[in-house]
Length: 318
Image (cartoon, rainbow, N blue to C red; front, side, top):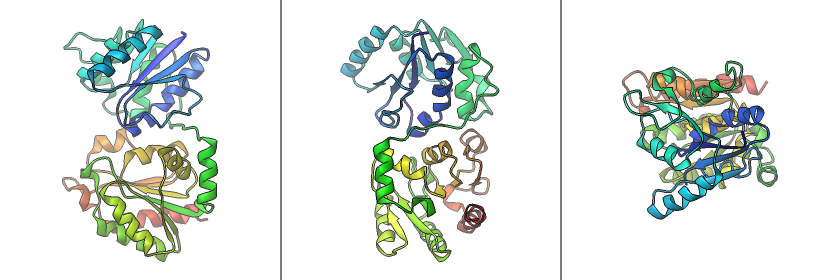
């Protein structure tokens, strides 16, 4: 096995959860070149990762696709793995583009499979996504003992920047206000109450937010000396997350990055049980806070979030 391609054109968190698969492939095939087929949304996360030989970027334009087709076919991949586990014409198309000698991916039994070694869709229903990604390796090894916690490699320059800019990061709580989907937005007033609670406990807080919520984070940080606003790249944010003592977030990408460094976390999840199990944090110490069944994300009680923070901080501060 000389050339391996992994396909992950989803979001940032999807790529983080694929890192256990990357690590195990490096163990199984230490001489192989492992390449990734990524999207513009997640292409920068692993660009300095020593486990990766090369990144290809899938863009939805005719010229880009034609260019990508020839680039992929010249590599003559021995193995292509696409872990996307739902019915997808995109997966079928990307499997065609890659043209691997062997290809493994989830496939609907009601349609001809684009993969030479298809995995049944019903094999992934109650599995954590990080474990589900490893199912392709059943063809090569026993996956039952493979660690499923994500792993991320920090860039030296990003580490230095965080040490210089946030020298007390290990004593800080990182609060991420943003989420990839507006349905996961928690009301502004709840965030303000939670941050006031943390400040009253004497905690130092680092806020991160993008889009509409960045202005709220800016306003909060400008009014309190115990609160700082993070500004930086995804690599710098990853380095920062690796050092803080607690992460609070509604966004699963931040959940999975925090899990990679075993950071304690309080996570806000929607009232969807399969979502809770499949994307659960993989840190040793965490609490998931869900709204009551049938209620929206906005109905998550800030008192419950405060109580979860209190419990975890009582552990990490001792």
